[in-house]
Image (cartoon, rainbow, N blue to C red; front, side):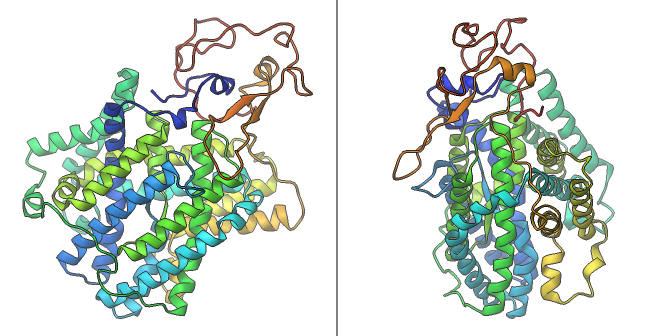
Amino acid sequence: MARVPRQDPQAFSRQQAHPVDEVLPVGKLTLYGFQHVLAFYAAAVIVPILLGNALELSHEQLVYLINADLLTCGIASIIQALGVWRIGARMPLVQGVTFTAVSPMIAIGQGAGGGTAGLLVVYGAVITAGIATYLFAPFFSKLVKYFPPVVIGTILTIIGLTLIPQALQDAAGGAQLMGKPEYGDLKNLGYALGTLLFILAVVRIGKPYLSSLAVLLGLIGGTGVAWLLGDVDFSAVQKADWFGVSTPFHYGMPKFEVFPIIAMLVVMLITMVETTGDVYAIGEITRKRVDNDTVARALRADGVATVLGGIFNSFPYVAFAENIGLVRMSKVMSRFVVVAAGGFMIVLGLLPKAGSLVAAIPHPVLGGAAISMFGMVATVGIQILGKVDLREERNALILAVSLGAAMLPTAVAPFFDRMPEDVRAVLNSGITLGGLTAILLNLLFNVFTRRSAIEIDWDEIEDDDADADAPHLTPVQEPAGGYEPQGGYQPADPHGPYAPQGPHGPQSPRPPQAPYGQPGQPGQQGQPGQQGPHWGLPTR
């Protein structure tokens, strides 16, 4: 099973494949992949629902948007995780519609008259922005030095914190119940709390295999209890068709207009920063090196997926932070699990009846599970911020002001109501506002003043003692002509300039370690004990 035990990265070099590149048995791929789909589904379908309702689409048109979204999500996730040429990060990243684009797309569509006429203008802007993202990807990846841990950690923390209110809203019954007596009903809160407590109990007392399926089991268990109490409606499943194919340009040829294109380009710029943060976060979780080329491949995948979205009647795409939280919780690192999840999404996109079955999961049950996953996203951001010297006033101000800016649209909904509509479409997103604030403040404090920024050290070992005890590592070199995953790390030359010093140098070999993924004997130096997994790269 693709897990990361508490041991240093040298263990990776003794394996044929890094845990990210491990191919699990079919049964585990199926279970873990389906768990990703369940964790992803609610957030995936909410964007077409919001846009379709805002543009006053018919029920049939709305269902078509949802199916087209799921189909494109599946294709995009496979491209990102599996990799095609130099497209795709080849890491366990699920692709989904970016929430950053919701407000701008609604503004564009309504400005074009709403309905399918508005969709055509939206799709023209989406296709153009996707092409621009693909072309700009290699140049943007070289700007990563301007996104030190204080920026990446802040953005990821903001993503988690701004998604948590959505989970809490679902826990209360969902946005469709706001203003009604049922919103916040004790039964809804009971479903959400029961699902969350069940997930925590499985993680706490379950065996490792069951713990990795905690979210899936929580969703199934919560839905089962709600069904027994008569609170699950399967009528939509009976009415849905068995098979439906999303055809290119279903509503007609896209329309390309200047101002909608500019608005969507701004959205994709923020999305590129978000994807950069997500790539570093998944590298932190899986302990796999992330460099400029990895970021460029991930951004190219975003661009290709966004172009496909415009062609197949869908939307802009980004690496989904929600599923990063699931990787963090389940401890399953294999990217092929995401490939399996992509296959499930394609099936759901082609089988409206199957998609309706998944959609029957009650909002409170989804909310209870999402609280833990979204919180994990914020936790990864905080973990990266642990590498930042927050005693330094400028770094502290970047974090503090960015968090405050990100909370404005969430805490004070009408704050920007008097702004022009085009400006409001950008500022009403907490992720966009907080991310832009972090980037601009870092430029002001750390770049324009030529102050050196701390970079993430992907070769850090657990502590100073472990540093003296473990040999230095060097990254695997990519073969000429394209990227091929090689397992992450190779040991440095034991007689070279970086030869290990101390009691386990060349003249004194270190004690043998247990094979990767197997616990060592308690008390044996350098061995993982029965203490659970080690997350990410530890700080000094």
